[in-house]
Amino acid sequence: MKHSEKKASKIVSFITDSVMEPSYLTKLTALVLKKNWDIKIRQQILASKQGDREFIDWKIEVENLNAIFTTSAPMQALKAEALKNQLKVNISEDLLTNLLNKPAISTDLAAWTLEVKEWDNQMHAEDEHTQHLNHANKSSHSFCHIDKKILLNCLSDPQPPCTHLMSTYTDSDKVHTYPPKLTDAK
Image (cartoon, rainbow, N blue to C red; front, side, top):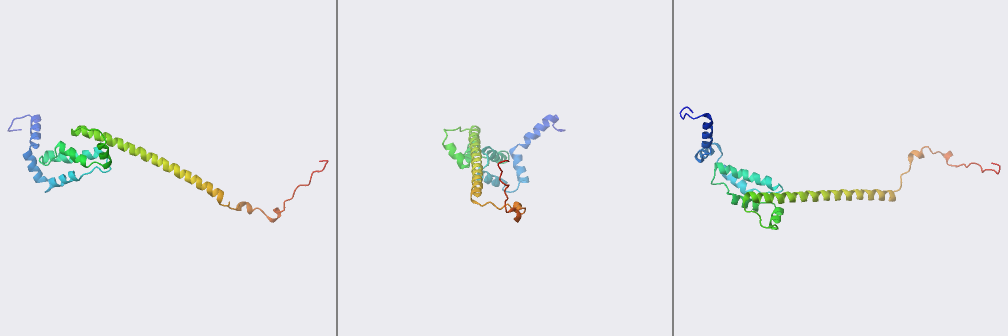
């Protein structure tokens, strides 16, 4: 600032622009990052698969890894079309099948992403609904099964003796005495 006679606001802008210079980034990455860091990240991008995750979460993760290359090793970064192809071949089987059954979709990465995200969300919602129905069906089936079992037990199992009544029952109670018959006068 002393030598260039620039204002503080101009110096910040000047320094920020300098930090983004490819030659500076190359020197910085050589000094700071571990050897072969770029190969490891590249392998991570190429090996990444959607699996059970939501499409958009997985896509953002892959894009973030690729963004590291954009600033630090631009030659390693996947261009938009290559990134889209990488995502396309590694999406879940169900989503891929769904995509193949749809009319042609956008070729632009951003538009394609939105369409795939909508289909993925729809598939997740359908799966959740199906699981809810299956759970309700299983609950209903097990409830009916329990009711049938209780009913069968009541019909087939002999009733246990009432021991609390038996203990108060004595031999003198065994003979049941009836009251005398009513006479004509009574």
